[in-house]
Length: 164
Figure 1: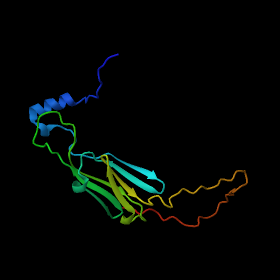
Figure 2: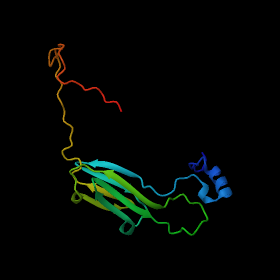
Figure 3: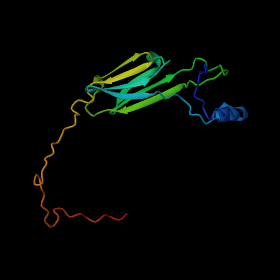
């Protein structure tokens, strides 16, 4: 058995290095900026939106807002070493914005946010309240709910489609 650690290799890394050397760092096609990973979970009647924000100063650089039926989290992951250009840099920095639709009955008072271990959790209390599926019973049998079709004139006449 080998002691070699296997790491995932970017298939375009060599090409990106070639382009960077020829045209400078702005010529690469890698996406810029930082987009935090998010998940929306159900916890009873509540919805919990979780965003991965490691290294972000949530007190100064993150805003959680409710407006127009949308929950919006915006902020910035700042690069303290922006001046240093040496070494390998795979961590993304920059401004971000994530937005999530809310049910009509949710108000801003039903929303709270906490931050722990690099994860921002936004709880939407009662987001799923009254949203349970209703089961419709199905009756078995040949005559149960049978429909007899008889040709009649339609109750509503369809108007011909207008030509544009």
